[in-house]
Image 1 (cartoon, rainbow, N blue to C red):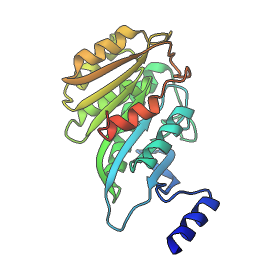
Image 2 (tube, one colour):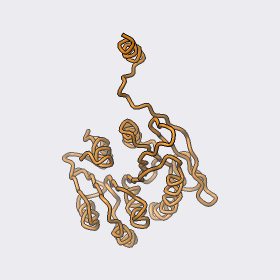
Image 3 (cartoon, one colour):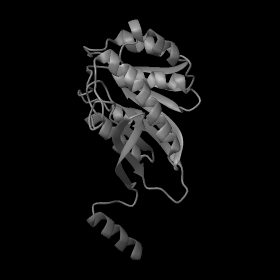
Image 4 (cartoon, rainbow, N blue to C red):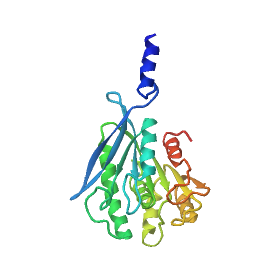
Length: 236
């Protein structure tokens, strides 16, 4: 009877016994004299428990509260994975100037190093994975190649082109040997499918999924968040 009463109370409160409690908090990451601001979302933890952490990186001239990144963070928490998403320099709530696309890419590479160090210092951090969207995908690929032993898995969403002055970034990314998931829409007018194919060819253990009718913003309705969570938790 007591168990039934507890279930009834949980249902009345809008909860279920299997729900994973989570909390989010505003955080700051210091990179030289620039303060970066973002959100740390953490599932309910037992004392001393360690959980996987995923860093979520947004695109150019955007911020870390892009709707699909927020949804990804929520689904990760429900699956027992913490997430850290931070506004890059000059974007969202962070300090500094955005600059042109090329300048922003260089700055975001430095930002990414600082964010990774922050994630590694979290007392509950287990394996660390990275997701990058658009320009954040290019940055995430470079980060993984620069720290191949520190990144458990990598997810790239419509990663920006690594051609021209960014060609060295792809060569750096090739140093990463862990599992990579690349999601690319076949209706993306900003990043063509061939760019995603080039990324896939560069990695030793990459899976490329071409998503029918999906665009650069992933607004067609494909469950990219679910794909990400299943990949990170090794659910397929």
